[in-house]
Amino acid sequence: MSEDLVTTRSLDRRETLELMAGAQVGRVVVSEGALPAVHLVVFVFDGESVVFRTPADSTLAKAAVDAVVAFQADHIDPTTLAGWTGTITGHASRIHAPAAPRPTHLAAEADHGQDQAWFSITSEFVTGRLVRRAAGSRPPTAPSGV
Image (cartoon, rainbow, N blue to C red; front, side, top):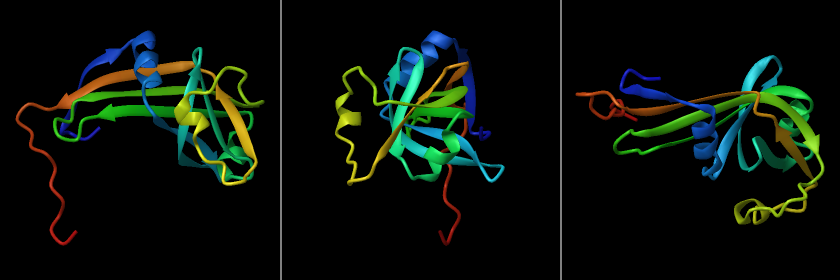
Protein backbone atom coordinates (compact mmCIF):
# COMPACT_ATOMS: atom_id res chain seq x y z
CA MET A 1 0.00 0.00 0.00
CA SER A 2 1.04 3.56 -0.57
CA GLU A 3 2.16 5.50 2.48
CA ASP A 4 -0.99 7.64 1.97
CA LEU A 5 -3.16 4.67 2.99
CA VAL A 6 -3.18 2.89 6.32
CA THR A 7 -4.80 -0.31 7.43
CA THR A 8 -7.31 0.40 10.14
CA ARG A 9 -7.82 -3.27 10.90
CA SER A 10 -7.72 -6.73 9.42
CA LEU A 11 -11.05 -8.32 8.56
CA ASP A 12 -11.92 -11.89 9.50
CA ARG A 13 -12.87 -14.46 6.87
CA ARG A 14 -16.64 -13.94 7.21
CA GLU A 15 -16.43 -10.13 7.02
CA THR A 16 -14.12 -10.29 4.01
CA LEU A 17 -16.31 -12.73 2.07
CA GLU A 18 -19.46 -10.69 2.83
CA LEU A 19 -17.85 -7.50 1.52
CA MET A 20 -16.41 -9.22 -1.54
CA ALA A 21 -19.79 -10.77 -2.40
CA GLY A 22 -21.23 -7.26 -2.78
CA ALA A 23 -18.67 -6.19 -5.40
CA GLN A 24 -19.64 -6.18 -9.08
CA VAL A 25 -16.22 -6.92 -10.57
CA GLY A 26 -13.02 -8.51 -9.33
CA ARG A 27 -9.57 -9.44 -10.54
CA VAL A 28 -8.24 -12.95 -11.14
CA VAL A 29 -4.46 -13.27 -10.96
CA VAL A 30 -2.92 -16.19 -12.88
CA SER A 31 0.56 -17.10 -14.01
CA GLU A 32 1.26 -16.49 -17.71
CA GLY A 33 4.77 -17.37 -18.81
CA ALA A 34 5.88 -17.52 -15.14
CA LEU A 35 4.72 -13.91 -14.61
CA PRO A 36 1.59 -12.70 -12.81
CA ALA A 37 -1.24 -11.53 -15.06
CA VAL A 38 -4.35 -9.74 -13.79
CA HIS A 39 -7.72 -10.20 -15.49
CA LEU A 40 -10.86 -8.21 -14.70
CA VAL A 41 -13.95 -10.45 -14.33
CA VAL A 42 -17.63 -10.27 -13.48
CA PHE A 43 -18.27 -12.85 -10.77
CA VAL A 44 -20.67 -14.32 -8.25
CA PHE A 45 -20.15 -16.30 -5.07
CA ASP A 46 -21.41 -19.87 -4.78
CA GLY A 47 -21.06 -20.47 -1.04
CA GLU A 48 -17.42 -19.52 -0.39
CA SER A 49 -16.29 -20.19 -3.98
CA VAL A 50 -15.94 -17.49 -6.62
CA VAL A 51 -17.59 -18.32 -9.97
CA PHE A 52 -16.77 -16.42 -13.17
CA ARG A 53 -16.83 -16.95 -16.90
CA THR A 54 -14.48 -15.95 -19.67
CA PRO A 55 -14.19 -16.70 -23.39
CA ALA A 56 -13.11 -20.34 -23.74
CA ASP A 57 -10.18 -19.44 -25.98
CA SER A 58 -8.89 -16.59 -23.76
CA THR A 59 -5.50 -16.53 -22.07
CA LEU A 60 -7.33 -16.47 -18.73
CA ALA A 61 -9.22 -19.68 -19.55
CA LYS A 62 -6.00 -21.41 -20.57
CA ALA A 63 -4.02 -20.23 -17.53
CA ALA A 64 -6.71 -20.89 -14.90
CA VAL A 65 -7.34 -24.59 -15.56
CA ASP A 66 -6.42 -26.51 -12.37
CA ALA A 67 -4.15 -23.66 -11.26
CA VAL A 68 -3.56 -21.90 -7.97
CA VAL A 69 -4.86 -18.37 -8.49
CA ALA A 70 -5.65 -15.24 -6.52
CA PHE A 71 -8.90 -13.33 -6.66
CA GLN A 72 -9.14 -9.74 -5.45
CA ALA A 73 -12.03 -7.30 -5.06
CA ASP A 74 -12.27 -3.97 -3.30
CA HIS A 75 -14.15 -0.76 -2.84
CA ILE A 76 -12.14 2.38 -2.10
CA ASP A 77 -13.89 5.76 -2.14
CA PRO A 78 -11.84 7.98 -4.50
CA THR A 79 -12.43 11.09 -2.39
CA THR A 80 -11.88 9.83 1.14
CA LEU A 81 -9.67 6.84 0.27
CA ALA A 82 -11.68 4.86 2.83
CA GLY A 83 -12.89 1.38 2.03
CA TRP A 84 -11.88 -2.25 2.04
CA THR A 85 -9.91 -4.79 0.06
CA GLY A 86 -10.14 -8.58 0.04
CA THR A 87 -8.06 -11.35 -1.49
CA ILE A 88 -8.78 -15.05 -1.92
CA THR A 89 -6.14 -17.60 -2.85
CA GLY A 90 -7.26 -21.02 -4.01
CA HIS A 91 -7.49 -23.55 -6.79
CA ALA A 92 -9.39 -22.72 -9.98
CA SER A 93 -11.33 -25.47 -11.70
CA ARG A 94 -13.30 -25.41 -14.91
CA ILE A 95 -16.95 -26.21 -14.22
CA HIS A 96 -20.20 -26.60 -16.11
CA ALA A 97 -22.38 -23.49 -16.12
CA PRO A 98 -23.70 -22.99 -12.59
CA ALA A 99 -27.00 -24.70 -11.82
CA ALA A 100 -28.08 -21.90 -9.49
CA PRO A 101 -29.85 -18.88 -10.98
CA ARG A 102 -27.33 -16.39 -12.25
CA PRO A 103 -27.36 -12.88 -10.83
CA THR A 104 -28.53 -10.27 -13.31
CA HIS A 105 -25.10 -8.67 -13.66
CA LEU A 106 -23.56 -12.03 -14.65
CA ALA A 107 -26.41 -13.28 -16.84
CA ALA A 108 -26.58 -10.00 -18.75
CA GLU A 109 -22.90 -10.06 -19.65
CA ALA A 110 -22.66 -10.28 -23.46
CA ASP A 111 -21.19 -13.45 -24.97
CA HIS A 112 -20.57 -11.82 -28.36
CA GLY A 113 -21.07 -15.27 -29.91
CA GLN A 114 -18.06 -16.76 -28.12
CA ASP A 115 -17.98 -20.09 -26.31
CA GLN A 116 -17.71 -19.41 -22.60
CA ALA A 117 -15.67 -21.27 -20.00
CA TRP A 118 -16.93 -21.24 -16.42
CA PHE A 119 -14.54 -21.45 -13.47
CA SER A 120 -14.83 -21.86 -9.72
CA ILE A 121 -12.13 -20.68 -7.29
CA THR A 122 -12.04 -22.27 -3.85
CA SER A 123 -11.53 -19.90 -0.91
CA GLU A 124 -8.56 -21.61 0.71
CA PHE A 125 -6.90 -18.48 2.08
CA VAL A 126 -8.90 -15.29 2.67
CA THR A 127 -7.48 -11.95 3.78
CA GLY A 128 -9.16 -8.59 4.05
CA ARG A 129 -8.45 -5.13 5.38
CA LEU A 130 -10.28 -1.91 6.05
CA VAL A 131 -8.27 1.05 4.80
CA ARG A 132 -8.38 4.81 5.18
CA ARG A 133 -6.26 7.82 4.31
CA ALA A 134 -3.44 8.44 6.75
CA ALA A 135 -4.02 11.36 9.11
CA GLY A 136 -2.64 14.55 7.61
CA SER A 137 -1.99 13.06 4.16
CA ARG A 138 -3.24 14.82 1.04
CA PRO A 139 -4.72 13.21 -2.03
CA PRO A 140 -2.06 12.30 -4.59
CA THR A 141 -1.53 14.69 -7.48
CA ALA A 142 -0.49 13.77 -10.97
CA PRO A 143 3.01 14.79 -12.03
CA SER A 144 3.06 17.84 -14.28
CA GLY A 145 2.85 17.06 -17.97
CA VAL A 146 0.59 14.04 -17.48
